[in-house]
Length: 276
Image (tube, rainbow, N blue to C red; front, side):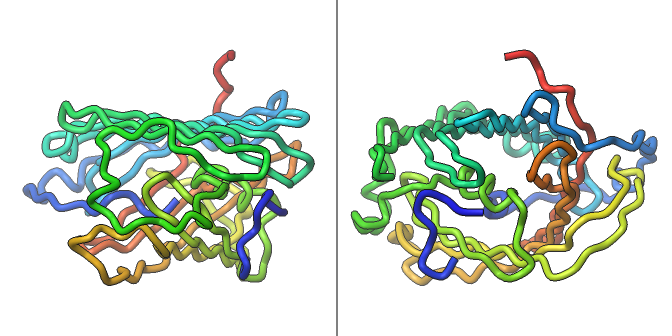
């Protein structure tokens, strides 16, 4: 499992959430979803996730992974839901694509577009054959608000390509992946020391074996000028399950500690993938 540019040592949590509402809604009943099977269909798999904080439904994520001969694509479509949407009406579509040879990924394009409380946000990167990243779009332009990212760090992979690389036969020993998103340079470490059997619940549709992993995300450059000290990120706990028909593992559950409580993510549905 390698990228075109592995870090020397070898997707961060969602934005911090601050909201309040009566806890009377937290105990609403949910129907238990039907168990799902993880399987590649013609090299593609679509998955849906729901996010909860303090018992409240706050977001939905649709993902589509394509692993084709010589190429890959990973797409995310995130939308705020429930009480979070009352405070932050937002959506974001993110797409990474590139070439591949086995588990070796070489990013070519990274695009992120979205709207948050009516404000359009966009970011686009293009990668040359050597992995150097060129910013082709940034709205709003926030470069002046941040410390400059060294030119040597203006290289692939992008965050989604790094995530996909980490999901191809994850190592049981810690592996670290550097990434660049146009504004920040990051270093993420994945460690999957154990395995567990999961049962479906009112939150999750997955049943079966999964790797129990710890993910840490550390920003290394591009800090906001108002917050010069690097912020220590709490490790996230992620369960990764194998997808039949390939070397891919998908997240089926996650727990992320934030300053405002625990953010939970659960796999709610698997494809079939939409037609291209």
